[in-house]
Amino acid sequence: MSYKNLMVSLDLTAEAGHRVELAAGLAKRFQARLIGIAGRRYEYIPFEPLAYGANTIMLDELERRIAADLRGLEQRFRDIAGMHNSLEWRFGSGQPVALLAREARAADLVILARQNRQDEQDPLFSVDPGEAVMALGRPILVVPPNTTTLVAKQVVVAWKDTREARRAVRDALPFLKVASEVVVVGVGAPNDANGAQDVANYLQHHGISASAAHRPGDDAKAANAVLDVVAEACADLLVMGAYGHSRTREWILGGVTHELLSRTPVCCLMAH
Image 1 (spheres, helix red, strand yellow):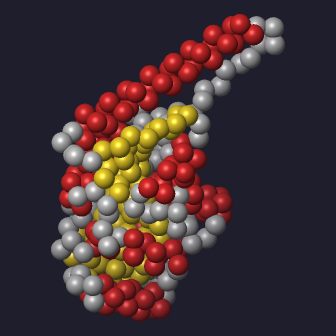
Image 2: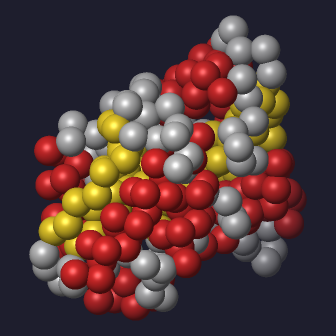
Image 3: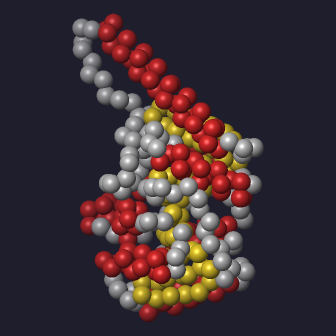
């Protein structure tokens, strides 16, 4: 298994360039096709019933702005991805997540920006990773600001015995196979420690250098425990399942996925 089709989402922020640079490096590493994609929301335009001509002019101007933004992003994508031999560009107007949900059929992995409240965001182009991981049917790689490369030499797998976590481990195998060390950490009851060891053994049978770790605690402390292991391992990639509970429940009450999506200081591969 390898990543042969990577998709990276663009917006008008400065961070989009860093994200494309990271994606281009991965595409070169995995000898993959790199697909740039951008979806632009429509802006709200107040319509006056008696001003049909004025509204038509405003709509025409909006369409021109959308087309100009998308052309600019395509050029930026091609300029940064540069020497990569296999590039594609896809675009559309409307909801960016809806566009991604349709086009993700062409991707093994979709690369998105982290959406912390303090992170630079683009209201017209930005994609919510939490919404995307639920909609795409593909693993996502969430990239924090100021990140232009992903070596994945040291990787942490946040383990909980759920369908989502099993899917994430499987989807991350191309990274795990080239890692120098993988730490599988279970947080909580002893059963989580047993599960982490079982996953480490599974990875070892794939020829991966993997070990297991256990941290006591409940769901409220799990995110902090996982991030502590990330720091201790000097990891640059975190792998985890997304939304074992419903996304609405996590949005209201908080949860590990919600916490890590907003706080992770390293790239995070998630699957649902």
